[in-house]
Structures are given as C-alpha cells and as structure tokens.
Length: 114
Image: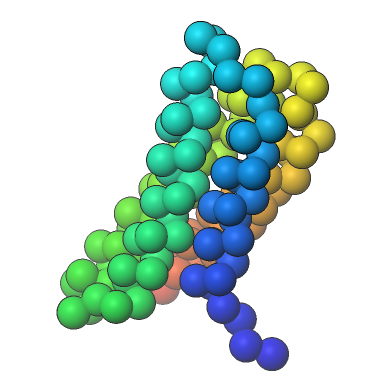
C-alpha cells in the first residue's frame, strides 16, 4: 500500500476548512480561526514544495517548516476547542490528525538530521 503524505496533508487542510466554516465567527475567535486556517493549509503547501525541492537543503527546510506549522496547528485547534464547546468533538478529531501528522513530521525531521 502506497502512503501518500501529500494527499493526507491536503485532506487535513480541507477538513479544517470545512470545520471552521461551521463555527460561528465572533470577535473572540476570529484570530484563532485565521491562524488555524493559515497553519493547516501551510502544512500541505510546504510538504508539496518539499517534494518538488531543488536541493536536499531546500527539501529539509520545507520539511522543518511543515513540522513547525503542524505543531502550531495543534495549538490553534486546542484553543478553538476550549473556546467553542459546541464544536469540541469535531475539533478533537482534527487535533488527533494534527497530532499524528506532528509525529510523522518529527520522525522525518529526526531522520534528516542524522
């Protein structure tokens, strides 16, 4: 079975977009939602760029950016869940996927360092 991280990160970004579309936008959560959208979509974009990298250094840089973005995504999902209890269940599902992606990017990063 082929493992397609490009597709998985894209599906994650789409899932985040779909979830936040259903959350009522307020003055209090507007910045959290914007940050979450920025980070979640950036993971997919940077991973795709990594796969098209022109050098090993460029690849490593894009992977490290993807790792940082997915870690930040976890935080924004947590904050949104804590401040929007009506969406907590669906946000926990997003957090679980973000956490799994964090572990994957941490492993890739560790392998690249060695």
